[in-house]
Picture 1 (cartoon, rainbow, N blue to C red):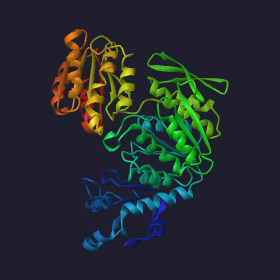
Picture 2: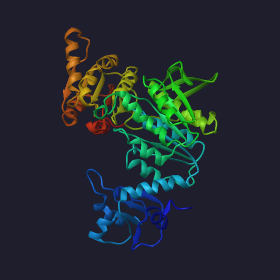
Picture 3: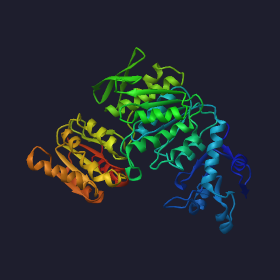
Length: 474
């Protein structure tokens, strides 16, 4: 089998040189010394917290065949089994571009204010049913995550699916020009990262940068259930996008979601397209999850492989961990129902998650809601948090825990409403997740339902793990 890279190929692409290293195969690439496989290439990236150069020796001892390091570090430290370059991050980008150039598969890129990772997972699920599919893991979607995932693209992969994120204008452009997708998906446009934008319209323009890397004749796939579709269309025209396809619940959508029915713990969906009716049976619930699955169905059709296999593949699609994964912990007759939405949060995803949670019925106890701060919303943060009041009340939660300094605005709004409406659930506010854990773990019991939702920086994932550890399957 042809290796992912060879030392000679890396040197040719990056302009680097070998030190104490022969031309050996490199079957994987890593920037994490804890995840080294045999014959790996370790790339010493300097991050905000750690410098990968500090872990070169550990990576080589763990079985890496080579480490890619900076000229400055080599001058100070020397060593063997090294590929030396001026800048490892730049070299990673050069490898990404070369990996994309040698691959002849169909490439998909996904961005949006919410639902990127879940949509990426749905797309890779359907494409994997057709042939070898490479895809971004976790949420590796930034200035180092995208080139790392692209540099790992196998030559023979039939499909590639890449997630591209941003929190500033101009960040998507260089990444999508590396990826050069045939299909670009924008899941939605909503209030996120407002700390760095003056309006949601500016966010829409930044998301539309994904069109700048589309291959000639490429297709844009756009969710139309938001107020900024006209901005996306304008940028698509300016970028001379070959074709635009819309999807969603709006009557104007090319792929219109006509009906959504609960089916046990899953969902049955009716979709109209060009006079044809398609039915999906999904293991996930929620309107936002349905939209993500329909985006994958469109990509499957664009691949030329047909819809029946894609529909069958989507029947096995489940929510990723931290993004709506629902767990039944403990005794089957009276479990604790845990809805894990702990990975990230903005206004759109908060509302979508709570819309889903309103349909959840506790197995036999209370209905608990735990929400953490939505980060990077800037001066509008307090008002946007307070604006979640209606969505919280609609969930039917019997108890609400709020975590983070900005969530104080929502706590105040709920407390004020409770003065005139005694049906408003009791609310407890904590400054940090460390303060909430004891109260939550003591209060929860088998038969309860609990949803945990917040931005990743609030660290609610740790609380989710504590809940899972305490209410383990029996």
